[in-house]
Length: 342
Image (cartoon, rainbow, N blue to C red; front, side):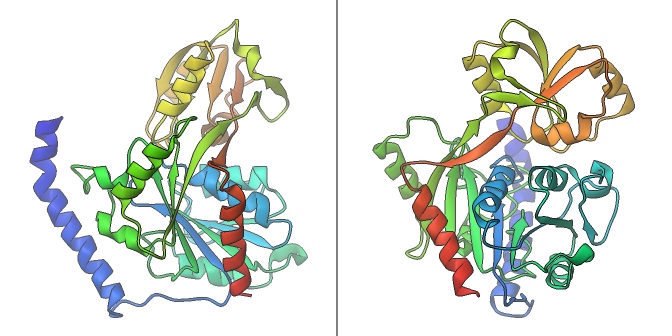
């Protein structure tokens, strides 16, 4: 693996040079970023995935939706359509992608849309919505930190506790989509997927590594796992799996935290791990059907929920939990930004 990384490193230098030039052109104004009159909150990362963007989006929606008309705008990664599309409860993963469908399923009262051109998507969301809905007054951009055609009101940059961007390098030798110094564009940095007992010494060590700018605030969060497993019909306590053998199916960038959690619970399972946003083939589905009990992630459930009545399939809900008593401060920081743009 080390040899491969060394072999690919020259290509990483080339890719890093190209992205640095692109960012420079935006910084000096040769390439234009468009600002908007309404609050635009961007959630993203420097790496290729696995930092917990989806639970962060849902965390933001959960406390903003009661006082604002929220819209979530996503690219709709790996969908088989193009252009602007609004997500409905009867949309398919092929039409809109797995994460946008998950957002709409969990928050049917908000607007969720997909568009590869974020400017076009925002302009659509600013107009009157169909069926008499109000136009959005707060837009959350999912995975748009690199989409510099839009000047967000607030940039939230996520980085995983066990895979900090400062310890990584550019694609293809590493997993970074942009050089590390691009983190300076963030207003908030959230270290995600932290361990349960995060001590002060570890926090201070990470802060020194990240070297935040004076205007940047660092928060720490963890993934909270539900005590229930769910599907479209029912919920059951996690203990339902205690005396059973099941297949864990994941198509996410970093399944290690989930696997560790289930093992800590003493559960007996096999693992079938696929790449992030994996499109399951017919033959793969047929092989999965041989397992009477399947547990998966909520994102993958969007793709697998129609697997068939012969299979018991559930997903384990997760959520973002801000650590060290900083949740109120984090929410107030977001709320202040929203009010400033009103």
